[in-house]
Length: 235
Image (tube, rainbow, N blue to C red; front, side, top):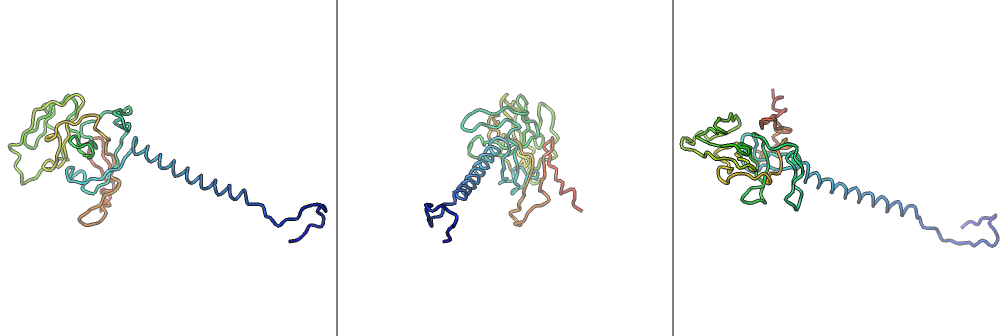
């Protein structure tokens, strides 16, 4: 240890080194910043998932051909007024569900399960089904999205007429011969709706174990039809 020749004679000489206070504080500060950033990110993700948008997977073929098994969709939750957790209250809605909207909702017979169907009947409508034709208020619906099994006779198929309650909706799957919907479990209460499907962000074919890349970023237009930009680019 070198001595300072100009130091006062009574100055104490020591080999002790002062602890790196600033470095320790800096390390603690960085750790705290990372923890705060992670907590904020988690809280933000929970808020977005609860009130704004949520991802769902299509597990069955009830909405074929519009939605395929293995499609991953995003659902707009704030458009109809998101449910406030642990209450029966909802946030204000931007608009009410419209005929043709494809929506995710709590299955009336088991609310732990989520179903996805198309809105056919609105509150106050009269729904009548005869064969392959759906009538709403006496007028047949134009349903280019509906799929029927050619090997199945629909001559004797009949439902209704039935009036939709003021706080409910009549739901149907696009795959009409393979869908559990309002024809079987009744009307859907307004407060059981989770949100409106608006885009397919991923699609996986479980049979070929490959990505359906042409279905990526497919979105639903105002009439409930699906539009796929990558399909249009097919040569």
